[in-house]
Picture (tube, helix red, strand yellow):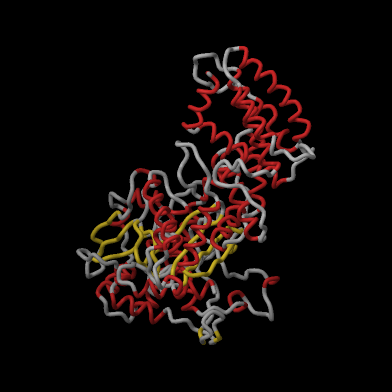
Length: 591
């Protein structure tokens, strides 16, 4: 289904005059320099096509005949290639024998000329005839003496041809394109394509897929067979999974187009994720800024998220349930690409699931926290030192799969969020959102009827983990007030009971809370001795204590209750920091 959906997407792109997608047998390739010829095939000038500045200059993407796969052997591209192939001159490289390189360059140029001769010898296009004349003459000295030649040698980029005064490359002339298309027709035994079911010549080697994060820069394959162990019934390479040449070109071109797109590609952990609809729709452009907004785009993205949440509540446009939508997550695996996840649905269903994700992780927040969190912000909050490199492998793909399929979030995400809370003694907005989202979705997917943690403080929720988290926040608050001089604003202490006891209170509460209760008596006495009122604090402490069951505080908490502990602590702290409560505290402590 993946290849079939991608090949259908290619047809959609090819039919759209506003999309510049390569036709069959061609591709967009970075071309650095242009050799300008006159109609007689005489060199006229060099033209630098590179864009950018300094060492970051890159060749301009141009439509050229599809390149071939080559490793160490000699194999020329048609009408474009590097200097050794086009001009037969070796490039100076450190550590390489220039004599051997020069001898190899002669063979490379020979292969290049033969390919042009075989393809264009009968073509009457004036550009093709000029190139043939230029190559047959072999007089390249004017090129080597040109002022741009040093830069050509240093760049080592691709070169192609055009006629002086012509805006098109020679390889883009209609007659040349027709000649190339005729020559590129695959030859071989017809077989049923495993994707379309139609008779076609199978592609022996599939085009490399580029743009997958972590994969080889030269590209990698989704379908490939390079060892005997992978083959069956004596078949070689692509014949083990026959994909017609036209389908192979279509799916690889569409996938490379998506991976190069700024709107339909996003990075979720190590999963390079692309998405598309069968027919054009705005959601193709909206999904990226919703789930992976870039810096400086928060306001716009938040408006899109608000609009999505509102639309899901009021009703999505008619017809979206009939429009298929696809999401594909890819990850590197040596010279191959692994399909991390594949989600096939319709626009309405995907919108509902994305909205459900934001509702599941919805959490009360401080004014400085972002209104909505991207998938990357969620993932990196669970990583050591908040570094993307420390996000566990596969986690990004698993989280994205949960969002698009509506299934439970990975347990690894839950455990990592709790682990970071305990390691740093800090429950952040992102971690609290993750824990709440995991618990909420776990309850829904398991059809549990028990009440789960809410968005903000819930004084009626009597789960022991949640209650102990609230109690820990109250005891910490009492300690902070005890060390606040009269008439001054409350200041953060260099070290509170959170820094010393948070991890222990989360996992082994029975012993820890006995010690914390003793400390709170001391802290309350200190507040009272300073002339402040403690009635409200004692009432709050007793109110939270009142939710502890008769059997008392447990000796340990399981992982789920450890998560509820963190959320309870976070909720109670956020409640303290609201302006209304701050005023209330001020009045009571001074009263």
